[in-house]
Image (cartoon, rainbow, N blue to C red; front, side, top):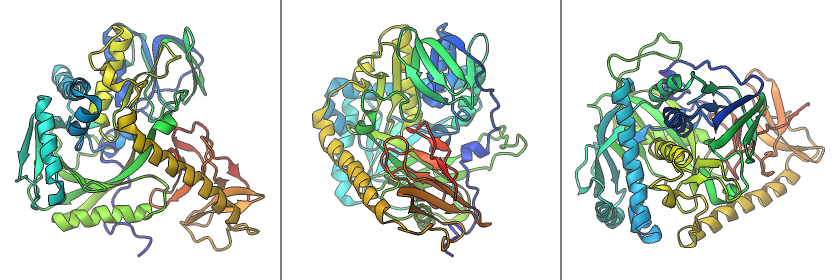
Length: 526
């Protein structure tokens, strides 16, 4: 029973990936010169790219793997300006002007997606609906009421309610009307088709290794160099980190299930004040749309997306498989679950002051821009980031720039989180060094390693990660993350090595799945 994570054996794949075809853009070949190089093929990079091409700029989108398959392809796909309970804090910590910029940018992003969907006929299951953040207990009701007051001051469509469409009672909730949900890959794959051609390019399987912020800028990749007047770094974690982003934001991983339920589909999108919070929304595909991952299957009909269990990756606590079980238990407690169709996880970065970094990447890089740290709300804020960055490049300014300025100094809003997060990273680094010295001393660690299991051992004074496949093959990799030297931890449900310090992930053979690391774990011979 320990090896069985969910009894229905759901597909271990994002719903968004499973219901769209795989892309086949070619890699970069030799060198290239364009107006703007965009590193990262998620919602921020592709939004910036389409905005820039429409402004007459030539662009090259450079994606390490396949576009819209990383964080953007593993989201809950909510388009909302309601980001938990944020506006009361923004007003008190940033002031009314910057709080309004945050609100306006996210509302504008929703409108921009809808406008593009309508103007270009993109069939991506877009529809307007309400978003709710509900109190998990009566102790949170005052916080809900304060958030309603703050949101109304910023002219957001907020209301306090005590009844919601949820099949269980809640003490109170904040409702934002006029929010939206969509299928992110259907939307973004259509945009990518528009970008590619007429002097602009989408390159896949082309990992950016380094950004030279000179004049012109240069992006070094494993397949050649892209020269550009400007560069947008729209990766999950910035490739160029001279401004200490590793210390100013922290990773957290969350889990999602797509389940089929017997009752009427849930109307709206939901988020709780629990710690960790729960998240829910219904996926209702348009009847006329449907192309499975092989191009022939149909969409799965209405499914409920339910999840949560957000945590810092790799830190001691329940294994990944247990977090999926907890999501399942929550779903079965509150809904009549008929089957569990898909399961997947996602990782996001949260800035220490809870506001994303969008703008010039550091004070010394005049023509390199960044969009990162969307704290789980990247469908909306990532869209806003692409729009904002395009405006900075084309016009030199944006009405939303101040609140998101990566060079901002916010000691009041960020000091506590900065100290706590970096103390955790430092403690993990030191603790891991002690563990590695004690790990399997004098043994190769493989003799009693069960199939499907993994551990860190010490061989020749070096920490090594061992994983045994079900058929018996043992893989050994360096257990030291090449980013900053922390020891990786095993993710039992997804069979990956995850770094607890800054969120890099690797396959069991050591290949990079997501950064900030740009190099893999060295493979060790046994």
